[in-house]
Image (cartoon, rainbow, N blue to C red; front, side, top):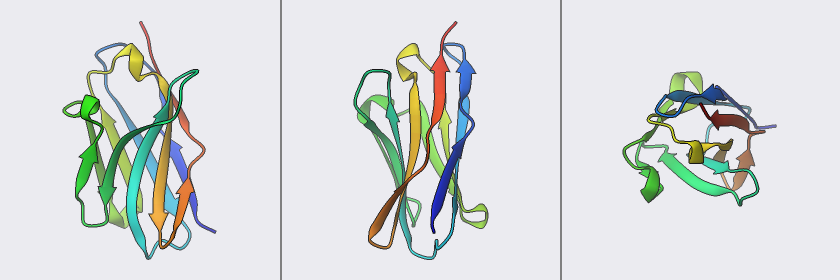
Length: 115
């Protein structure tokens, strides 16, 4: 079965940077897109950004300029680079991929921005 696993979360000071990874395994021959979502404490899950199979990216308006999505096809991996982190970025970050007609979620990784 297809499987996603996020990693790279942790504690970082405001203004710092953090890079999250999403490794995809299984049947990955038809990956249409890889997306990142986040869920702050006590809040609803929200969209962060997306990258298509062709490498086209899109971001939540509030995150443009601070967050960058990339992918490495050889490693079956997507990356979310987060810069100038703010306390409000504290959340569980989730990877999501569209493979064929199905959507798959990772288990999430905790990002805490605090001094």
